[in-house]
Image (cartoon, rainbow, N blue to C red; front, side):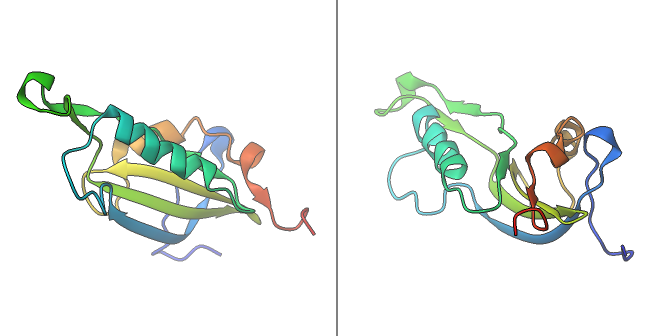
Length: 134
């Protein structure tokens, strides 16, 4: 049963998964030297999608923004993703899915552009079925 404080998203076919847990941190935590570039961003995104457990991961790819051209940097252009990486565990009728997205501020709320993209997500097709897995 949903309570008034439950956070839900709307996915394809009207499925409304409920947020069970949320982890957030700086997108570039641990970056010690230089600035992010497209290659580093791709490494971060690849690490997210390859760290698989029992629960599948759906990545909402963030937009990158160039903030310094290559001519102003020894290491090429500085290209950043949004400041916060968010990982939410969502449940819809016993089916679980980790969704990872990026946004400029702490969640909630979920960035409207992310929510809009999730409206096309076929949650039930990729979520982990806790009952069917036993």
